[in-house]
Length: 253
Image (cartoon, rainbow, N blue to C red; front, side):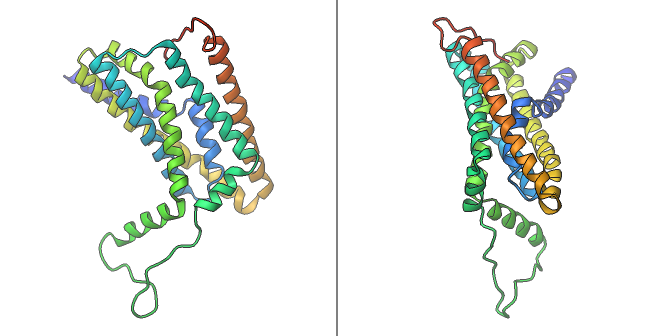
């Protein structure tokens, strides 16, 4: 029992480390470079982690509990989708489409509740300040900017779910403990991605206010890196993995 609890705790920290995988970093970097707030960047990281955790848990639990087998071509296709998504994100960033979408769907002005005396309603109840901050942050973020990291995280989770599930099955024989490991692994990924996107936001926010050219360079650099890394993954999966060949060979990783 002590050993299993230790393994579960380890799963949380391995999830945090998993958030730093190169394809994850490149994807969220492309999004975060368009944000102008540190808190909103952290929320984006959390939403990416939620999407990633959802698919890791659902697909991984299906593999562990019901012995579902993923065919090689399907597994390669899920990883290939990550490469295509990185290419698309990079192109949208470089062409300025991401910036226009962000401005269109992230309203900068808020409709604040007014008091009967003409001013803003004072925060006099316990917890009101925190509630107002959450409401303001999510409303400024916008539905589009909230769904985007959630969807991207979901795609990344599909690509890595089989590898995580197989590793867990080899380490923890009990399927229910293994499923609990997946959940803690996902929670660790959410925490790790929140920390990472928050750290990424600091130079972006600083340069956007005082060093415009450096900010532009960061944005363009993230777009170029996303396209290049996406092409690398796509070629590696499509040609090296044999996705478009008659006999694909896939090793979950």
